[in-house]
Image 1: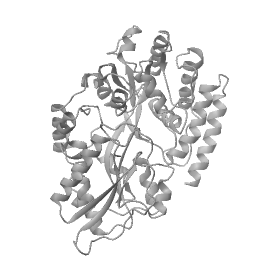
Image 2: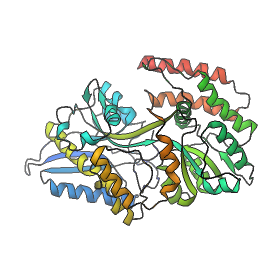
Image 3: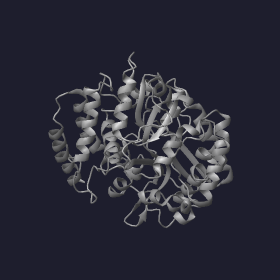
Amino acid sequence: MRSTGFRRTFITLAACSLALTACGSGDEDDSASGKTRITVNCMPPKSAKVDRQFFEADIAAFEKQNPDIDVTAHDAFPCQDPKTFDAKLAGGQMEDVFYTYFTDARHVVDINQAADLTPYVKELKSYETIQQQLRDIYTVDGKIYGIPRTGYSMGLIYNRALFEKAGLDPDQPPTTWEEVRSAAKKIAELGNGTVGYADYSAQNQGGWHFTAELYSQGGDVVSADGKSATVDTPEGKAVLQTLHDMRWTDNSMGSKQLLVINDVQQMMGSGKLGMYLAAPDNIPILVKEKGAKYEDMALAPMPGGEATLIGGDGYMFNKKASPDQIRAGLKWLDSMFLTPGDGFLGDYARANKQDAPVGLPEPRLFTGAADEKDQQVKEANANVPVENYQAFLDGNQSLDMKIEPPNAQQIYSVLDGVVSAVLTKEDADIDGLLSDASGKIDDILARG
């Protein structure tokens, strides 16, 4: 999962409706102009004015540099709606170059809706500079089916001002779940509706966070071979017991539960929440939409010291795309997203001029000289308190980076019920909940 589809300035809005007309591969060439035409998605909606302006300007620049290519972009938020994604693929409505979460890669390949990029990827100038573990996500059975665009890793966002008010050292954030529990209790004791720690427990987001918390303690959701559930374990029980104890024994999670991301962001932005798990891209949302201050928002690594959940996105190609469309799409990706210091995601100088946040601790996409250039341009244009994120950057060095499980959304739906039960029922049977969830996840994995 990912909290936003755009990296910098996006303001959360209601989801846009999907276009009713087909938007997948159609005529490759315009008979009059001889151009190769491609459709792409994940263009910011008009309501996200700055991002939309950047995106359109970058497409115009690309078309000027490549007069034989015509790009038609479709906007959407979210960039991918899990409820309609498969139907759009099956109905032939998917764009030639389409946005995907990391967890989509194998599924799209398994249902035979992805073009094989292996013969063409050598034409993607940036491909060899991208982190190998990210490239591997879109490699299935030795063939390349997609190109990574961004990544994220989970951490602990906390309010420095509340830490100080509660007598905690904001420069020494919690590193274990025991310390999280202790800090949450002290913050909640400030009163006036202040909550120490909040967690999601609805709309699959509870299952997502349960997975991250399980990873942090050295556990896993499914076995290494992907065939069986591994949630009914001491690590799984420890996750739920900690949540139960913070909720019911310490009263540090507040009485309102069944929260989703927007609820928790509102709490943090209003100064009433001490901590929650999130990726760095939450920070500008908290500031620009929810009323927080950059100087108060800090980020620490995942408590537990074992691992953190990573995710992200990239682009795949419609199986009906022609060779010329694939080549054109790869050129577009290079120009838009994969050129250090330039393009929609890399032009940090442009972002800084528009007061968009630069310097958030995003995982590095590139390696070698490309990474060095990207970091140099980012550092030169940083406009956020980067020192507030140093603990996160330092702590991540010792953590395993683990991708989301297969059939993630289905599994998260099962685990949502487990987390919500623990947070809404003081006498919830943790052992029974985990046993039941394990059986349901086994069934999901058996169906593939």
